[in-house]
Picture: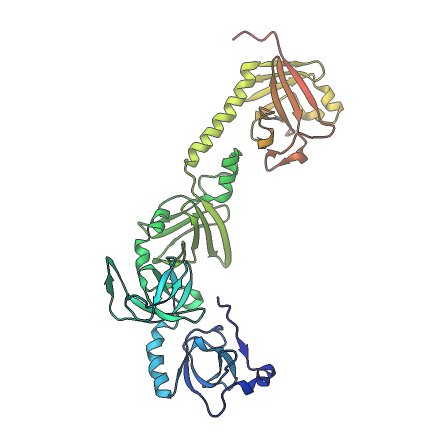
Length: 437
């Protein structure tokens, strides 16, 4: 979390000891913001041994450990007497694990807990974190805003007072569990916009935007939802099915929220795009979810209609087609076909003898955008023995041109190119004996 320098006592430090003040201990101190909570936690009572005039740091040690540690001045409150330190420590204890995050650019830190001209000493940036040292006991009203004054310490060593209306103040418990100390999150309009919406796996958006509506992989039952009325998280995907109640929501950073009582955390890039993190059965997950404006059910229905209309084109244009070399092809209701006199396909090892003459057609392959002006679509012939042939096709004045697509050139049901080596090309003429419509 912290990046400030932190060094144990070393021979190198001993070599520059002459730069530190001599004599007895400087006094006693409270460590306000530790750079290493495991080694020496914030809120520790310390002995301050000496001070460097060169690198603005103290040499300190704890009361139960003689190991000497170099610590930047701004992280320590120094006192002459032990009693002064103990009193300061009692005041600080309620805030040892409490932090603040700025939600407004340029939020001022002031020398006193009041607004006066010239008492601004620092301006926080949006998203910047600071350590909370103290809070005034009573809330105040400034204009039409109500809140508390907090004494903050920034990571670059500035200490001063900040009004909390545009702060998110939170405490870190065990396992870094977040607890909000001010309740402004309850009126978070951005968070409210995320409630009660179904968010779908992020790869759905790419497929839908590109027109790759794969009916087997876009599942309306897979979604993430925050049920605000029942305070319930609902997540269903191909790996997990989770429903958990949360106690409250903590705003842990800009547009980032933790759902207290669960492992769920979200980071919202905007109200339509979420990054979701959670732990389930001992495994950590990080997944992307999106809100899709048009109902998924309608999108799937539109895709079914598209495929049905493509099949009807072969019926309406024909339904019978002839090739001088590759036989006769007929299309029938229920997306079925009959293909006879195609022995050359068997001799070319494109089909097996067992393929038979009939099967069904499907339109579940997709054209890359670069091919859409050149081809009408992709038709797939599924023979009764399980063999499968895919063709790019384009309508001509008197028939249809088919270009076989090798299976190796199909990526996630998408044909990216038509530059195939030694591929089969067939032209089927519309049979003149077809009845006039």
